[in-house]
Image (cartoon, rainbow, N blue to C red):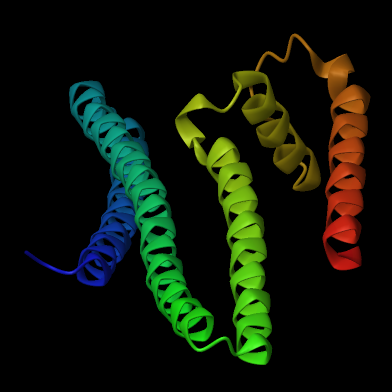
Length: 198
């Protein structure tokens, strides 16, 4: 059975391949669009329709490759978390063994050092778990609210002076979304300060 680290590496590699395939499909789509333009210029409407179908298919392929790559990235994130948890578990087993030896020998100084190490491991595990839970709740790209996606697309289009062609029903909700992000940042900053204060 392959090691977890090997599986993570293979999935990352596959994700990169999918991203490359997506970029190639995007290039192919652009080439097909150019063929559509040339066919229209020549008055070949039937050919233009065929090229347009090819362009649409290539665009769909690019999106599907990108979506699958995103899903693999989410899996890699989960597996990476699992690998870190296994490392922490191994470390705790060693600490427990050292604590048992210290208890058997009535060596209070060694016992205190081992307990401090044990507590640090638990604190690290708590911080790591909290971080992973937060990342995983935000990682699910497929469950991202459509309004957020539309607002981002509109924002990027505005930055580049492009027309996004999206109907944004909740365009007035942008300030509220900004304040929610600010309060989320404030909450994270407060929690980080609490962790540092321990």
